[in-house]
Image (tube, rainbow, N blue to C red; front, side, top):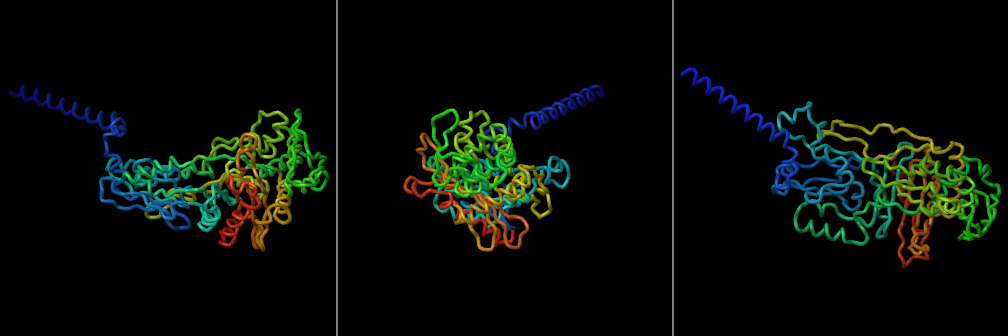
Length: 487
C-alpha cells in the first residue's frame, strides 16, 4: 500500500512539474508570439484601460484622455490639435503613434519600467503604472504666432533658443486635428483615408520631415566658409566678381535679381543677395572647405533626433566646380529642413557655437516627481567667433537696410537673411520663400531666439513670392512673441 502511495505521489509530482514547465513555456517563451497575435486583444485592452499621460506646453496640458466606456476605454484628446500636431503627433487605437506620442510612448502609456516604484515590481504584482507626463520646451506664444502667421499657406516654422538648443516653436501647415484619429470607429477610418489622399499632405511635418532647397539663406553658410578660409578678409573690399558669372567649365551664365553686384563687397552682396558673388566665393573656397563648413552646421547628419527623427539636410560633396557654384547659393542638390536652417541662424547668434536642438525639457511621473531632465547639451564650434561676429553684422544689415526690412522689431537687434529658392525642371516649380533670423531684446546680453520660415508659394502669387515679403513678417511675429514673453 505504501509503495502504491509513493508511486502515486511521484506521478503527481511529475505532473505538477510538467504543468509548471508548460506554464513557463506558454507565459515566457511563447509570450511574444501570443502578444503579437492579432486575435489577442488583451494587450490593447490593458493599454487603453487607463488615461494616457499628458504632453505639456508652458505648464498646461495640450493632450487629454476621454473615457468611452468601451473595451478600449480611453481615447486621446487634443487641445488646439492642428496647432500642436507637428509636436504631439497622434495616438490612435487604430493607427498607432507618431512624433512625441511615439517617441515617449512608453512613459505616456505607463509601460516604461522606470515608472515602477521598485525594479521588477510590476512583473511580480501585475500592476500597471499611471502614465507619465512629457514637459516640452515649446513657447506657447511663439507657437501660436507661427501658426497664425502661416495661416492657410503651405509652409513651416522652426524656432530655437541659441544658448541652449531648446525648440521654442515647431509648426507645419496645412495641419490636421489628431483627435479625429484617436478612436477605431468608422469616422476615424474615413478621416485617415481623407488625410492620406489629400495632395496637400496635412500629416507631413514640413518643419522636420521635409527638405527644401534653401536658396539664398544658404549664403550664410557660404559666407562663413569664405571668412574662415580667408578667401574674404574685409567685408567692404571688392570681391572681384563678374556679373554675369560664367559657371566654371560651362557656358552657363549666372545672373542676379539686384543691380550693382559686379565686384560688390561681401557686405553689399549679402544685403542684396548677389548670386554671382556667392557662387564665385563657393568655388574659391572649394568643395572640401564648403562641405566641411556645411557639415559643421549640421548638414549630412543622419542622426539628429529631438527626440523624434529629423530628415537629413544635404550638401553634396561629389560635385564639380560648376555644380559647387550652384550648391553655394542653396541650389542644385543642397537641401535643408526648416529646423536645420534655424540651427544655421542659431550658430551665428551663438557666437559660432551651436547646440543640438531638443523638444523635451523633462519627463515626470503622474504625481509630478522627476523621471529625467534634458540637462545642458554640449555645443560644437561651427566657425570662429570672429567670423560669427562678422556674420552678425551682415545679418543685421539685411534687416536694417536690405531685403529683410519687414523683420525689424523696434528696440531689438534683429539679424536675418532672405531667400527665394527655385526648384523643378528648368526652375518651373513655384519658388519657396525663405527667411532665417535671430533677435536680441533691448535688455538681453545675447540673442534669445533663432527662427527659420519657409512658405511654399502658389502659382497665383508666383510673381510676388519673396523671402522678405512672405516669410520675414512671420519670423518677426515669432521673435516678438519670444522677446515679449520673457522666455
